[in-house]
Image (cartoon, rainbow, N blue to C red):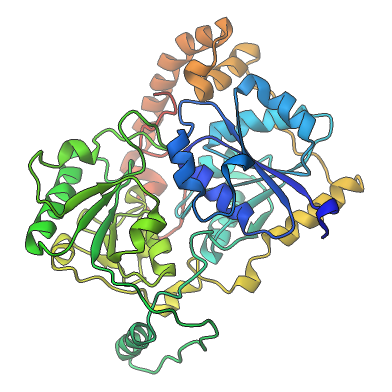
Length: 462
């Protein structure tokens, strides 16, 4: 498509992980006019987080506009985008979906999640049920969201994209890949044929760091998080010539997508080995000198695999949906704390890759689906999937808005709605958790879906 006819695509986001994902996703599409609209909420990325998130995406600071929620509708009305990508947590998507619905010229609405989405959670789909298209990143996610939709009666068209952080495996040396294939063949008792390598092999830069990708949500217990901190100290002491890098998403005073109750900065000892360092830079920067990555269930594991960096997905606290690490079953990446200290990282089993984020690029057809939807919309053939009004009227609507905007919502009705709604939702949440005897679908290891609310107590309000 020529520049004059290029589609105008606007991603609407707030939190840092959604900024990185949406900018990376749009940056992968040639021939469009992309822009990023950051709406102010308690989670909105700081200027420094924004700078880090944009690294390697192809989008620049000039491609970003920051607005208050009250100005978002007017800005979108003036821009008249062809496509809007809603990139935020569920309540944010619902709120901004209502804004998009009110535009004179409604664009095609696309939604998605910024990383690995196994298990597929009910809320993740329910909040995005009124999008024209849901972007998923693996064949496994396609199946999981289709099953979830059938279970809860929500039908949202899905389309497959390559996870923006899983595009290149060029850093894996040919010898590394041959060893992985040979090892897996031996385990399988047969012969695995390596894929033909069509991309040029780059010389791998010296890489010695052990990088830990911290997560706000998992593990949830302070004692478990303290055990991880102690493991990182032991790893640093075991090899003083190796840096142990604790990769954090936010500096003190900054927000991030999920609420972290026990930050690693508080759990690490005040006097720690000189080779144990903290980094707030991009994950790509951290992985450029990484000999291995450690995480519980961060999407950084996929980013590392894409670069040929070996991984340990910690299973010291178990493998369960509540740890968000069941996606690694069968990958060959699961390992314990002693293996972290010893630096015994591993590459994934090739048979796991295709179903889990490393499908051929030819199968990533999400943008073709978007173009078809735009054509349908222009021809008047695309039904509008509007976000319905809140069931309990204006006060309920104000509650939805204030829950997302927090202190950015300065309306009287918003304040009143929070005063009534906060204790009510706490009581409702406790009642729902009380009904989840045995953990419900969160404890069911035989599926990739969950039906009950997640167990993380992760309010947007900070």
